[in-house]
Length: 280
Image (cartoon, rainbow, N blue to C red; front, top):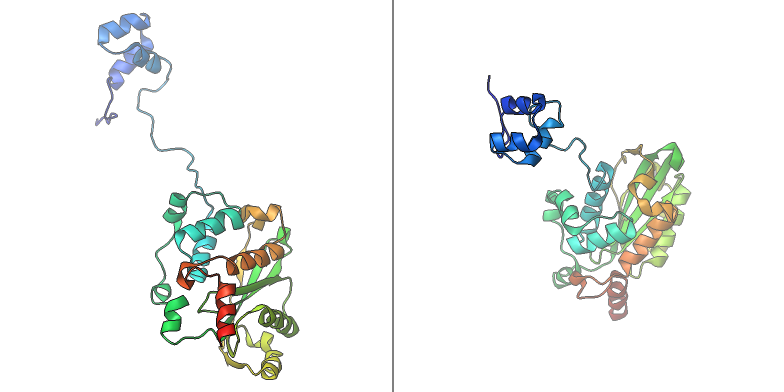
């Protein structure tokens, strides 16, 4: 029978059984077999003679699978470098994780992200101006602890990365209109067009609003897929212990819009757009 021993083993299963059955003292056995007293005591205190498995019985991960999916989605959405993403995860979401651990959990960038359109100063040099918004909608099926169905609406200006997001307990065309009106009022750019990724049923009131403001629309025929989140949000985002989800989301957008970014020449998205509007 093949016997596999630990690489540093000083005893065999036969010697270990002898140690367990002997009536001699620890020191006598150590002297007889040429091993340490510690080794003698270790095997006399065990019932088995095989080496123990070195693989941990319980493997602890620094992040839950839901958290890993969340930070990867944030990275793809914001295009934030590792250090900025780390601050967002630690300070914004309340997920305590080291830089090395966060980097280990990041998946390779999506193809779309690798070939993403130009942004910041590079976009301006290429003649791209921040005159449009992309509008998105994500239905959420949350746990009963989080009151079930919710809807995430967010707008993004691609050149600066400026964003405006809100979380609602229900969805309707009027709610979408109210949200977009609030977003347009907050956006420092002179928006001339929007591209929508919102279900047609929720867009009924948008044409009139956009026509009133002289904004053209490119409406994508999409059917947003509901994201099911069965784990209570507070277990995924610890910061929710201190503030509600809707408030946290609004605060994170405000924080991101007022954070200096290298791609913007050290300006914040808010200041970058304000400066361009004054120049225009």
